[in-house]
Image 1 (tube, each protein chain N blue to C red):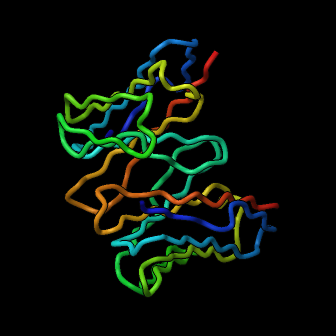
Image 2: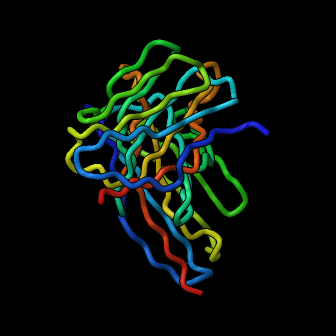
Length: 113
Length: 111
């Protein structure tokens, strides 16, 4: 069963703590993306990666970090430098050889305690 | 930078009424995609338009790409409660590596 998975579904962070959100895909897609969605808002791009071992900042990268050591994995770390991390985080992947279609994971809701 | 706006932000319709959302880009787009996000869910791809003036239909949904490739619309005929959700457009301009998502239109359908 192919797809894109994110874990955990809900995550609680204490002040000053770094947390890492997992994103895994078995679609053999080259490109992967992280978005942040706030209540009633659109999708804002945090980071994206077009190929393994390479990634680019999106529109709101401050306070976040990523790695792309494997094609199927693109974890996002929300650092303590991100002052307002409470949001819904969505990971997506895309086949760069085909349409622009992005396939989204189910998302992780991050709450700050 | 590339900006993509959608109007309206919210729309409440009576079941059976039609619904239209409009997407406007600050730059000419190479292509445009439409996604639907159900409440509590994640965006799901609906369709991609590439050609100037292109019109595509999916059952009760009609998608249109403007002649100047700077705007697009999604029209739903005779809405049903299953149409509830937020509709996003997303587009890429020729000089950009990444796609920019629109601000979204949240549709509520009153039974």
